[in-house]
Amino acid sequence: MKLYRFLTGPDDSSFCHRVTDALNKGWVLHGSPSYVFNQETGKMQCGQAVVKDVNDKAYTPDMKLGEQ
Image (cartoon, rainbow, N blue to C red; front, side, top):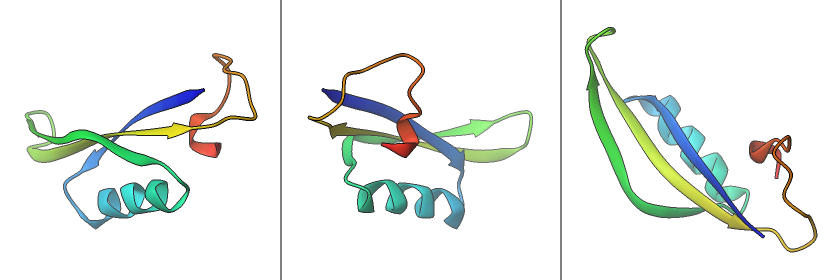
């Protein structure tokens, strides 16, 4: 099964650490990163899709993707 996550966060080191953590848990970058201005906060936001193949489990809508 292939899992998909879209990581988002502020344009700071915490976002980079979240993506790095996902990569070190076997997730792979998928597509280009996103970068958008959040008018409510006045700050830039980042986003990055990641995917992962998991062979020993079946997908269920209640699974916590970040724990895979």
